[in-house]
Image (cartoon, rainbow, N blue to C red):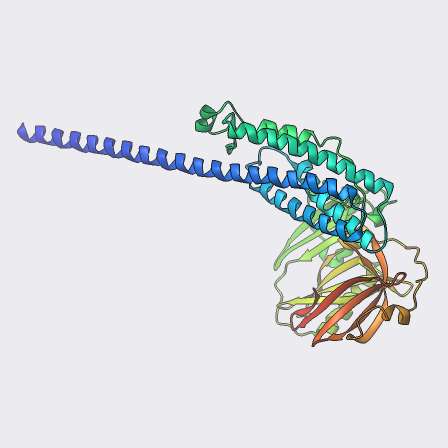
Amino acid sequence: MEKVKSIHVWLYAVLIAGLITALVWGAASSKDAKALEISNENAYNRAFFELTDHVSNINNYLSKARLANGASSLAKISGDIFRESTSAKACLGQLPTSQVQLDNTSKFLSQVGDYTYVLSQNMINGQSPSDEERENLAKLNEYASDLSETLTEIQSRITSGEIHISEKDSRGIVSETTAEAAGGDIFADLENVEKSFEDYPSLIYDGPFSEHIENRKPALLEYADNISQADALKKAEQFLGGNGGSLVFSGLSENTPVPAYTFTKDTDNGQISISVTRKGGYILSYLNSRSVGDALLTIDEATERAAQFLQTNGFYSMQHSYYDKLGSIATINFAYVQDNVTCYSDLVKVRVALDNGEVIGIETNGYIMNHTERSLAEPQLTMDEAQSYISTGLEVSGKKLALIPKDSMREVLCYEYAGAFAGKNFLVYVNADTGAEEEIFILIESPEGVLTV
């Protein structure tokens, strides 16, 4: 009997000790969780306060930009705006905004620095801002002022403890401790910030964040008709020839610049995937993921195979440029040539297996987005006249006419000068009409390929 009683006492002691341990552990965990939440809250507050400061600075600099009448002063101000907008976007990215769409706010911060930079470059090149550009600056200033005022009001509410910045869980619910500590959260306020940009004007300009880039349509498909899934399958089978049988439809990509049907096929040595554009039925991409043996072909031989393949499949007047080599696979870039002008926007990439020369991949997105028969005007400068605008230090070894894309996707007719300087190979592009130096690239040549930086 005493033995049973002793066992019971021992069990009770173990249970009590376990309960105490659990309570201590729970209290410690709760304390750690609370400390982590406070730490996150402080980090969010710091990011938001810095965001407010950067937007306030953008607003002030835009006021100066509207008054600037000299190229050097606008260039300095645009640099300040670009720096502040970049920092503001970084702060915005640190906030827990996964539950709120802030696309318009982010777009504004991207465009405001980009737009003023483009205007300053135009002034440096002797082009004064137009009335429309001045009006756009005024609109940007107005939106920056409103955004600054709104963020300052939210910051005051955060400081007073009226609202907190907190993570939402997967159900979109703010953490209980924060909800208890404050009357609300910041997400409703951020949604109102986003709504303030609903009437934000479209900005068309020569920069990478211009509205026309986001809304670009594939030039090659402009007048093409939609085809059915069955017709797309026939196009894919025809392209693949003997490998076209047993293709299976795997999806239609619609929310992309080039909607396309995709078909796949498992093989004994990998998988084949091919995408056909919904408009026009062009091959957008093809990939055969088979394993490739040891390389037996040279890059020149692979380039010849790739050129023949393009010719056979309706890509005419294509000229190879650069390539890269990964293992026994070479990827060779081809650009369209019109009237002896290399149109670098019309790009096709061809993957060649170096074990037997088979084309195992093609990517035509650049060609489909940009290809059209262009009206190419005669250059205002001769090749020799344009060469006088480049550094005499470049030992020119090759020259030709080329149409190059800028960040804004605007194409510029240039003379391309290839040459050596200080032990490196360069490509220098000079505007064929104005003599302006548009681009300078270093050619990086190695056993793995020829690339530009």
